[in-house]
Amino acid sequence: MLSVSFNWRKGAQPAPTQPPPTSPSSSPSGLSNYWRIAVLLIVLLGGALRLYGVNWDQNSHYHPDERYISMVTSDIRWPQSINEFLDPKRSPMNPYWIARENRERAFAYGTLPVYMTRFVSYWVGVFVDKWWEGYDGVTLVGRALSGLLDTAAIFIVFLLGTRIFNRRVGLLGALFYALTVLSIQHSHFYTTDITLNFFVLLTLLFAYNTSQNGSNSNTFMMGAAAGMAFASKFSALPILALLPVAALLYERKKITTRNPKLVTLSAQFARLNWVSLISTLILAFGGFVLAYFIFAPYSFLDTNGLLRNVNEQDKIVIRAEADLPYTRQYYETTPYLYPIEQMVRWSMGVPLGITALIGFVMCVVYALGRGPHSGATSAGAILMLSWMLPYFIITGRAYAKFLRYNLPLLPLFAIMAAALLVTLGQWLDQKYRAKPAPAPEPEPLPASEALPADHAAPILSLIHI
Image (cartoon, rainbow, N blue to C red):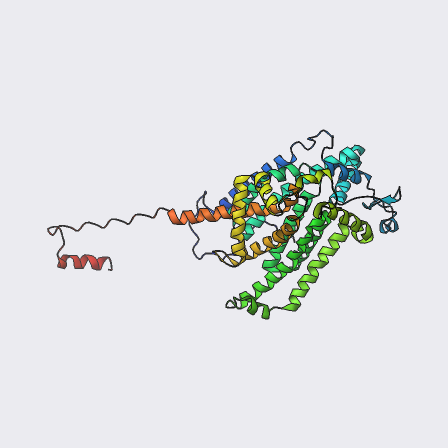
């Protein structure tokens, strides 16, 4: 149902009538094995970088956000009954209220990472030691989960790059992301950013699948993954744009498949199947609401607590109404330009960062339907931009411009950088590929050695010329 199998080719291709000659080194099966090994090595490399030194601070808790999330996680308990779960003032699971002290609690983070870490630490405590349920233990469990999720994100980057472009882009993009500095650093923290990043990528993968085949399973999982992203961090709200965009792309694909001559958007819009579109949206948003309720139930059961914390963070991060020491560094920084400059210099590094920005421009061209590309590539570019642009428009203008706010953009920038380099390589290969030299013309025989016409005729008849 997940549709994440090893489908190395971009789209279904008709089988050739005459298969090319095979050899142990060039057969399709052998080549696929090489690609699988390459992907595995990249994922293992990225995983080693992300899981090495999980207890890097020796339980000193230097990261302020991580420290507070760990305090709340270790304090969370599972309700003893349904009635206790449904009562936000009694439930020990409510992150916005301390039930035993009957007072509000400040908590401006998503709850999916908290519940996931608390669940894992509880069972580790059951089978290993209760220490893992405490303040130090949940921190290490949360860091390990961050590392594992970002390792899985490397593989999703490969799948996205392969399906939208080709497997060379997928492999190179996965390698770029596996070596991205900021992602490696934040995989060593128990915060919400890496979890958000993983579910954003998962949403994009299912959104792309939905845009190509429109299956109910992909549509529902697209919405569910978006709900889990939103339950990880509230800044994921722009992810909702992917749901209608993917549905529209699939309807457009059906129209153009039946009527290839309909190239204008107005003509395609006139033939839109509204019943099918609305059904797809209901299924997708149903998955979103269900997943969000499961992993962030007190957003519904304690809405006042949620809004109180969101409004407080809005004053600090967006509007700069609160003067705090850890945000003063962003005084008089230029919106949008400052985050881009920081991403190039520190998050990705100058060579990869500049390549990614140029690749972004190329994907904008593809999304507009220009350049040498397929319809699947155009759809993938539209989906990536449908997440990146709204998200960056919101976070790029914020007063506080922490590097981690751009984490959910880095995997897609890695894919775009890879797409640019692969496209450039193909262009150079076509332009400068050595052409075979023409065969030399045979020298004419001397007149003395030429056959007379009456002797040549019987010979030509023997070879049926």
